[in-house]
Length: 215
Image 1: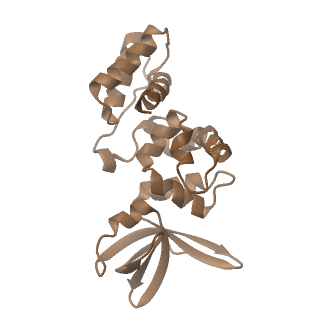
Image 2 (image 1 turned 180 degrees about the vertical axis):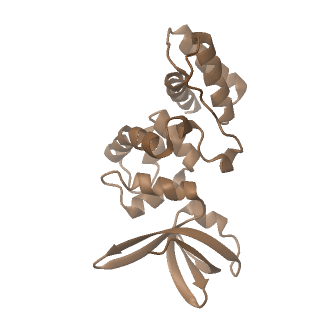
Image 3 (image 1 turned 90 degrees about the vertical axis):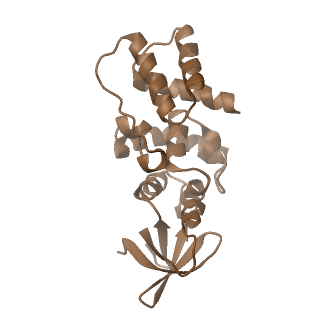
């Protein structure tokens, strides 16, 4: 099993890169976002890899970050999502954006990838929530990949007053990149409608509202 490659970038294509590792040239399939990190032919890069071995095929898939690799594993655990579709999804959304999409049950994020139709997009958002929480942990569903944002959101499990839950939810949304006005408006709307619950229950509802407003 090849877990990691470090070598000189020889060439790239629409969904692949070739690394020269001590004179052995490895063809590695990559997402568009990983390829965007491979900026200079002749420079040395390191890719984390997953290997697919079948009777008629041996292929390597490369990732520039551990987060992208872990998401690839999670995505391809869903029925109907093969290696090619997994890379296509990672080409249109970052791990952080996929977290948001799962929390807000946003099918359009997944439907934007090649090979993902409406039925598969619906299955993805339905199945991924439990898978993501199991792999990344319930609290980290909102706060993975601090390398992208520089921020880690910590959701406490203490019993909070209703107002505290809304305030914590707004703070978490701000840390996710939303403007303070947008975050506060979203949670205020939910509060006005009579929604109650924990921070973890409020945030997906607020994200769903924010996602609808963006469109």
